[in-house]
Length: 77
Figure 1 (cartoon, rainbow, N blue to C red):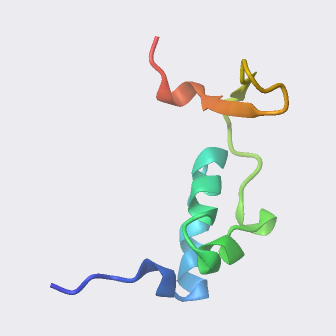
Figure 2 (cartoon, one colour):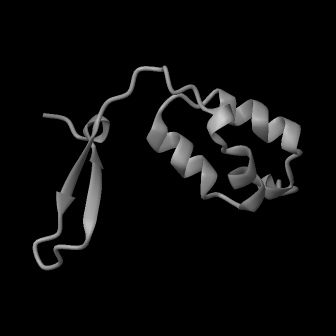
């Protein structure tokens, strides 16, 4: 069975894929896969008008300069 090398997708195909990503956190995750995907994850390829849930930013107790972002979408109350 052959294993696909996702980093070798053509720029046109990765541009099409990233344009279908609607949530900012998924857009960021897409951009860190590899260099070619990061090159496709530009402001022009993201729909900023799509509805977004805000991220919660909390400071770490021990380090005032360090922040963590939490997605409300991933937590169920």
